[in-house]
Amino acid sequence: MSLYTLSFAGGSLVLIAPLLVTLALKVNDLVGSDHAAKNLALVTGVGSLLSMVSNPFFGRLSDRTTARLGMRRPWMLLGLAGGTLGTLTVALAPNIPVVLAGWCVTQVFFNALLAAQVAVLPDQVPVPQRGLVSGILGICLPLASVAGTYLVQAFNGTELAMFLAPCAVGGLCVVLFVTRLNDRRLDPADRPPWSLREIAGTFYVNPRRNPDFAWAFASRFMVVMAYAFLVTYQAYYLLHGLGSSEHDVPHQIYLGTLAQSVVLIAASPVAGRLSDRVGRRKAFVALAAVIYGAALVVIATANSLGGYIVGMAISGLGFGMYMAVDLALVVDVLPDSGSSAKDLGVLNIAGALPFALAPALAPVILALGGGSYTVLYSVAGGCALLGAAAIWPVRGVR
Image 1: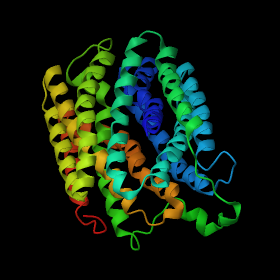
Image 2: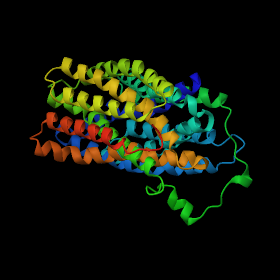
Image 3: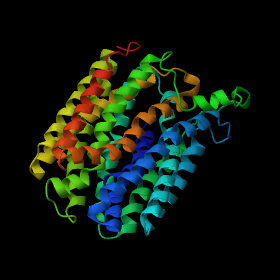
């Protein structure tokens, strides 16, 4: 379990570090601050669309894999190698088209890695322990965020190292887990034949037959939309909303991420464990989304770096509780245990689509709000509250 947690954090690290800092700064260096937001929207939006397709697709392939290495291990290794190559391409890119191409490769292969990693949870963790385990996994994103922003600021001024240091550290964590994993193996006789219906079902779970899954999908979509507004435009919020200098932004994002992560790491395992003990999921998920929405309002109304850091700390409480219990809730209502990686890949669309929509919607919201990040993050807070409301119709778990 320690190695699984370490690997999950490593998989998050390789993808989150560019999203938090380096990708925005790379785009800003290439096109200047006047055109950065529009070009960043293009790069992150297209990359997110590809991640929506690649995660369930590779999850489906993982569910059908009969290799001697197992069902999950081959895709972790392939995803890590391909994603690192894409990150290198972004780091060395001389223009936006090359950044876009590199980021697309990064998203496709790192999502193959993540699809295989998350499938280990339903593969090997029994139901009474899933709240605890998902709570432990819930600390992986903040650990990755802190590690990523720390590594980036440590190599500030050396662009190639800013991109590749997180890949090196995260990749090592993944490889350590892969070498020790007692991976599930699929008998070739149990692999279903390919069909057009099965291929189409790769990206879809019938909401009429599985309404609980559909509501859980909607809740996660809205909460991650709030998160996407925050992290995608965090650098520009500091630059234009609080008046920070470009040189100070990596360190300030590190401080905010650290404050968020300290609280999140404390809250996530506790929330997951309490959820197991009381046998309830929905109340924890709804309360967490409300807290996260309140945190975004604090950030929206902040007029100093201190206010931003306080808001980030509160967001750590909400997001930590949410990610800890929501994953356990979703695994409990999966419609078909024989295609868990694929179904979790479909759920990942709720985590990827907001990163495609947020960059497209944010410029419109900013334009309507006169360029105010207070308006943008207030809208984000409203999204989190909708995420809280969407979880109550779930009937399959308490």
